[in-house]
Length: 141
Image 1 (cartoon, one colour):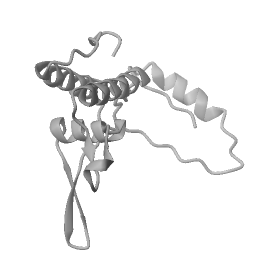
Image 2: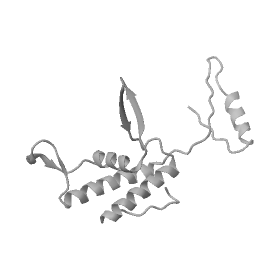
Image 3: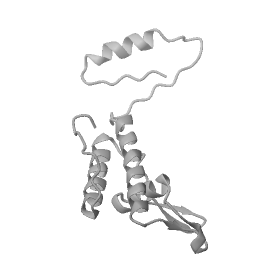
């Protein structure tokens, strides 16, 4: 699939060339929508590095998860920390199935600016708790 991002009317030439070179022995679907810069891999990687650091810091502080008896005390998983952060700092989406409503928290839908804001909230909160997470370089993220 080809993706062309139009920033001015000059981009129409690029679209015209791409359309002219299609194999018209089969039908094509063309769609356009406003451009939304998706979050980048660096942001995603940093998020999960931080989740691991938070998990380790909590475990070293004697905080973990308990499932069943006290014998099953364990560190949180990175996914549990990720979910906790999402519930703390993101607005929920209400999903209703069979008359039951469930709150769903999704970081996947954030663009780069919103995801950077989300990361800054995480960094600030955990900093207040005493955990220093590596700083965010706004130009890179």
